[in-house]
Structures are given as structure tokens and as C-alpha cells.
Image 1: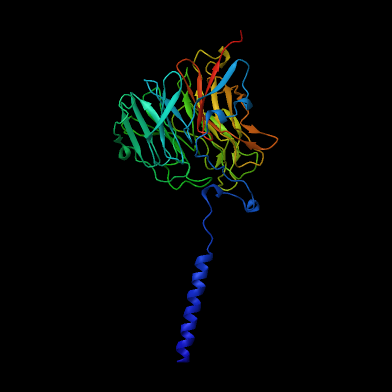
Image 2: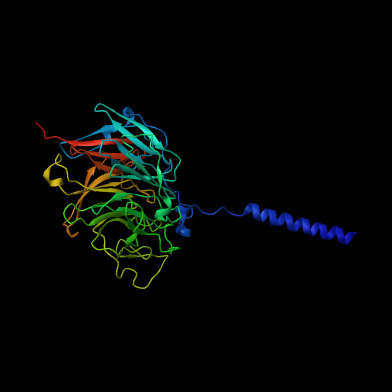
Length: 404
């Protein structure tokens, strides 16, 4: 009897110990902490919480924003929380995706003001583009096409998911979509980590497809996380932004602006950053050998987003074919950087690049705070430019008029 009681006690103790061990097991670190060095375990740096409620146009601090002489900024539309990349249909309606909210907005301009509706909700970080009157929506795990949506708001989508063979990992797999001059759909697939050896070759790349999802071609590799691209107005070459990794210090590595001069170029991830910096965690001999160098360094952790070559006629002549690049703003940096819209002018071959601030005032350097996060631009038919603010859920209009 005593032996049985002793055995029972031992089993109970073992079970309790196992239960406590199970209870005390630490939760896995969030994805954004991957690559954090042990000496920064107590760092307070973390991604900034998104704002998912609408901000009224009257509450936007336009008086804090600074532009070059002759330029004007105003709130074009409000009430679209989380608004990101935009595309304009032939009928004048503007469509925009979001990230965590999972919405796609349709914004209608009646000439006096703008109204919006939610086209679809609860997708996994959808992005949008237009092609021949059809709205393409791509989420991490879904591709939908809305044919003739501007004239038929209730049109049901065509599900094209199977044709695109989307990889499943979520981290950095949110999309930016655009049809190129060749009529093909260009899509990035980011690295599924902050820094890592890729689990499979289908990540950290830019692809292009035929509009129906066939003919997939990988045109760039080693691209950690591009969230914006455009084609040079003269050469038709693809230029794109790219985010550098986190947790390598306040000032390294830079985000970058890149030029794809031929299909198949390698841009360094995970071994080399910004063209010259070998990764400290994922090591490789001669890590930066054979890596295509960036056109321009865009600032460490600045979160470069949309890129657009300006081809309109409203702005002064010196802006013709200049790139407008939105920098959403840093989180992995003690002193915040970015939170602005800049221009980059460069020769067609990528040489002689010059970065110039264009729109500033979304952050307060003295207080080390911010209130807005510019993300994407959209050139309008009259040459004015729209700029989305993901933080406030508003879209600004930037215009120019000569002083009288």
C-alpha cells in the first residue's frame, strides 16, 4: 500500500511538474523581433500601432506641412482608414487597398467632394490595380478580378487564385500590384522574415504574370520587401523601392531605390544589404559580390513605399520624370526618420541620383513624434498628385500654381 501511495505521489508530482513547465513555456517572439540581438532584449522599439478609425478632414494638421513655393496641399478625401496604394479607373473612380483592415475602397468624385464605399472586406491584406476596366485585387491568399466594376458596382468577382500559385507565408508577403508597359502584371513576394535563409526560393522576389495568371516569370531576386515600383518614362525599365532589415543599429542598413536593367538581377537578400553591407547573422563568403547596387540610399529604416515617375504638366519643368517616393517612417530607430515625401532625380542609367525633401511636417523632430504616415502617390489627369496617409485614412491632393 505504501509503495502504491509513493508511486502515486511521484506520478502526481511528475504530472504537476510537467504542467508547470508547460504553463511557464515562453510564448514565441513576434515576427518583428526576429534577428534582435540579445543586448537589445530590453529595447522599447516596436512597430507603431495602426489607427483603424476615421479622421475628419477638419482634424488634419495641414498647417504643419511644408512644400516648395507654389505648391498646395489639401485633403481630397477622408474616412478611409488604413488607405494605401491607389489606382484610378477610366471612369474616374479611385480604388485603394489596406493592410490589417482587409478592405478595398472605391472613392467617387462628383466634382465637389468625394464619397467612398467598401468593395470587399475581411481579406488578408489586399492590394489593387486596374487593367482594361477590370479591378484586380490580390491578398496574401486570394486573387479576385472585378470586370467592369465602375459601371456595375455590384459585379461579382472572378476568383483567379489557383492560377497565380501564391506562396503561403504572411510576413512581408503583402502586395503591391501594377501592370507594366508590356501589359503584364508585376507582383512582389517579400522575404517571410526580418532576416533568414529563405525556406523556399519563391520568396524575396519580383514576378510578372500574364493578366490571367499564366506565364509566370521571376524577374528579380534578393529583394527583401518592395512596396512600390514604376517604369522609367523613357527607357521603360523597372525601378523599385526596397526595405532594409531591422536590428542592425539605428543607422544601418539603408532602405534603397533600385533599377532593374535586365531580368534576373540579384539584389542581395539575405546576405548583403544596400549593396555593400554583409549581414551579421546570415553569413556568406564575399556576401556582396554579384549584387546589383542600388541607385540611391533612402535612409535607414525609413520604410520607403510608393514610387512614381512624374509625367504630368502641372508641376514645374524640373519635376518632369523625377521620382516621387513616399517614406512611411521608421520604427526600428531611436530617432524617427522618414514620414515624408521626397523626390529623386537620376540619369536614365541610374547615375547621378539626387534625393531632395519635398513634403515634410508629419513628424516633430524635437519631440520625436509623428502624426501622419504618407504611403502612396497617384498622378491625376490634370497633373495634380494624390497622396495617401495610412495613419489618418485620408488622401491629400498636391497641386501647383505660379504666384501671380
